[in-house]
Image (cartoon, helix red, strand yellow):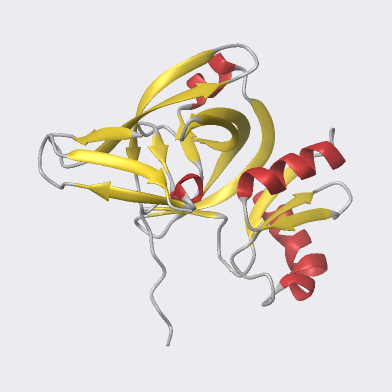
Length: 78
Length: 121
């Protein structure tokens, strides 16, 4: 399901959000491709749950490999 | 909010998490390497009845990426109750930077040292 989720992000959402919204949370309705985006995880998640109450949801962080990091910091590229 | 640095030099703070079914208090580690809200073991998220918010990927210390279930609940934080995202993760509970956002974190990094989280606005 992760592969499917990232495919939806790559195909329909990435170009719209990167780089302007880099670092923000995007919560995606996997059934329709609609999404909510914003800076604070809890706020975006609650908006997405209210808007898509029965949908399968996937959270990603715009411009990052994963929504969260736990004990990992990507190396600086510049 | 006040906490203590543990014997393993982990900054710890007590948090109360509120779910639809139950509430519970945890001693959580403040993890500046975690950029989410809160983690709890999956069994605890279930016990509190935390509502599902789908799933997300997390990148771990070895660079691997894992899929974690995501939930929403409420937490008593800086004198108020607020919404919090909770990732199901089998570590001890972690408080992350998204929950700390907007606050000032101070710690005296010795065993038994004081940890404080205060509003910074």
